[in-house]
Length: 213
Ligand code: AP5
Image 1 (cartoon, rainbow, N blue to C red):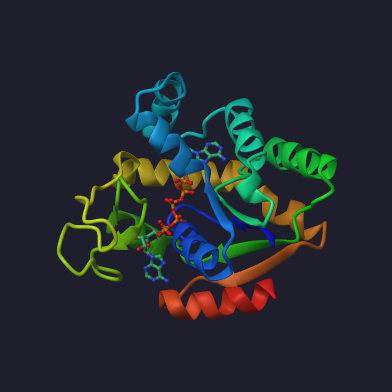
Image 2: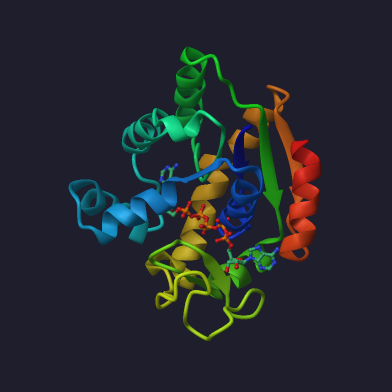
């Protein structure tokens, strides 16, 4: 199974990708998680990426394409993967297409998750994340069992630096300008399935599984 999850910030890509990866035993590959990990370790990549991420802008294409090229060459991806947050621009989609063509293992389905902008802002501003195992919670919709601590590993939950409302608005603008054209890009290649992202996590997951199969 080789999939892409497309959609605006906060729509639930990471939440659904995590569930699908666990259910189908495939790799979840999130460029956002890879970049945040580099930022927290203060690597050269992290220092470069941080200024773009904090400003709600995309990290330059050549940087993320290099990251994905390296990640997909790992043997654990041979059994399948779901890409969460990549590609985000047409040049990224074209680079991914060439990379997978070389390996004769093309993308099989692109899921476009969709909810209203009002709901996106609500989901993002209430999000809390585990800095260790990357699990995602929501203070109202998906609270952890013990307030402020990750159910899975017990680490202290944090709010992402780019989840402030002003930065969220910028990220949404960037999505509409640079990423939304990918809906048409993959639709024209008969790979796109639109999935309504409104409803409980389980309800959305049911729709998503139907769209994938
Ligand atoms: P990234 O981490 O990819 O952020 P994003 O795409 O903006 O998406 P989010 O992680 O904000 O949301 P999500 O759709 O995964 O939602 P989630 O499941 O968490 O990227 C961050 C930054 O990194 C970018 O701005 C950019 O700078 C850089 N970057 C990353 N990839 C890049 C690339 N390819 N090119 C260039 N730059 C790149 O859910 C959100 C909340 O809602 C959670 O609290 C969750 O609990 C809750 N929730 C989920 N589902 C439901 C539901 N059904 N009902 C109620 N609540 C729900």
